[in-house]
Every structure is written in structure tokens, then in C-alpha cells.
Figure (cartoon, rainbow, N blue to C red):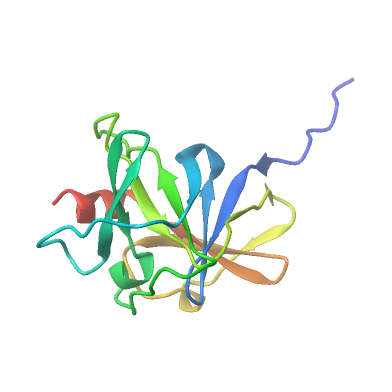
Amino acid sequence: MMQPRARERIHTLEIPLGGLSLVVPSAAVAEVVTAGALVPLPQAPLWVIGVLGWRSHAVPVISFEALCGGEQLGVSAMSKMVVFYPLTGRNEWEFFGVLTQAEPRPQPVDAGAVIAAEPSELPDTPYIAAGLKADGRLLAIPDFDALKKAFYP
């Protein structure tokens, strides 16, 4: 006799931003670190906050809010930096970071417990691929291909 399939569950991380949270696969995140001093990057776009020294790598840190056309929020006592593994097709040392406004937290996504967000509920930006609602909260899914085009024109 065939056993019923267990519900599909994806392990994700919820990344709180200013006014919105991103949800990303946990496997895309290398580490979450306390926000520290960043070295400014001359002539970088306004959404690049600076460079973080992390595990002998120079990691550019971005403001996702500013990338999407919003206000660049500063580093606060609650801020963290989420260090992502390199995007597909990039060199193994090309990590990047996203500044958060609070501690990211695990957000298991159960296929039966979430619903897709309507496009009208999401910010109008090419850097968000889709969204979902979990526990009454709107979570945006970043478009990693669009990010790659922005980072490496």
C-alpha cells in the first residue's frame, strides 16, 4: 500500500527589511552576522552601503530597500547582515550581503499553509519575483536573476 506523501516543506529564512520581509531558501545563506563597520566603496551605486570584511573576503553589502527605489536605511543596534553565497554562474568568492533591520529568523514554508500573494500586494520592482502570505504576513521572494544583472551589468 502506498503511503500518503508528507507535506512539502521548504526551509527558508525570513529577512526583515524596512516595511517588508524577504524570504529566501536557507541554502542560499552563508551566515548571518552582526552589523559592523563597513568600508565605503567609492563610486558605487547608492544601494551599495559598503564592504564588509568577512572570513577573509571583501563582501559588498546592499540596501535592498534602496535597490528597489526606496530609502536607504542605516545600520541600527538591531541590524544584521545576511551574507549570501555567490549567485549562479559567479566565482566561488563573490559573496554579497543584505542589511536587515532585525534578526532574520527561520520561516519553514509548508505548501499547505501558505498562499500566493497577488502582484498588486508587492512592490513594483524587478527585484522581487513573487510573494507569499504565511501567518498573515506578506513575504517577498527576491529575483536572483535580476539581482545578478544589477550586480554585474
